[in-house]
Image (cartoon, rainbow over all chains, first blue to last red):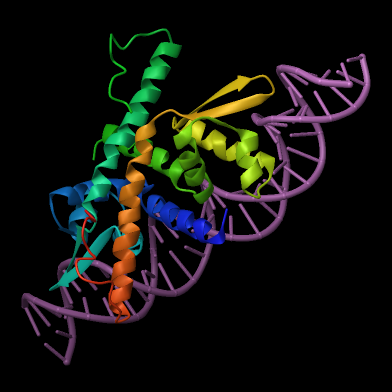
Length: 118
Length: 118
DNA sequence: GAAACACTTGGCAATATTGCCAAATAAAAA
DNA sequence: TTTTTATTTGGCAATATTGCCAAGTGTTTC
């Protein structure tokens, strides 16, 4: 593998890594309906304000969200909405896994329950 | 947030985390054209055999790939091909970032160069 | 059966991530 | 101007990830 390709895979992995945290994943999904300020996130989850801010910064550094200060507040918005699309695929991975687990434990999930996972 | 929702976000983040490594990302893309044995991966990248094996195990645990032993070799295959689709979106994030960097340094990437990133 | 092959597993040190606290900054309100 | 509100930053300990080496497992080949 060429050094150039390696850089490319590292860059792509960095974007995925930014998304690969439950809190950040939740944040990204919250942004689907529009921009939110830090306080709106902090109000819902029980984490320190600074923790919320740092998570948002990780998403910002990865290029996934944008921030804009207006008055006292900083509003974050989804910069690349397509990230929401692949959540469906991630959920498909979970479904496939769940299905497998059912069959291993001798249970059934019903006929044709395996559709649409690819 | 309910405990149930929290579990769901944790599960989804775990799948993304499995993908969030340059070597594993590369492996997943290699599997696009069909199954490969561990030796085929090990032959290309310069990492220990055990390292390759462990990366593949991470993907397997996440439910992204399946393994099958045939003779002396173990073949890995993509279980949920849709993971390949969202690479395009990840690349879009990188493009958007690159574009921004160009404009910040006073360069230009040409007219309409910002198309198709969402 | 012994040796070779294709992996997997255990152990471990180096490194990175996470989340809390306390302190710093920045804007608006008093 | 002082205070309050909203957020970021620095520091740090707990935890997780990574990748190498050495040793183990299962399967062919000799």
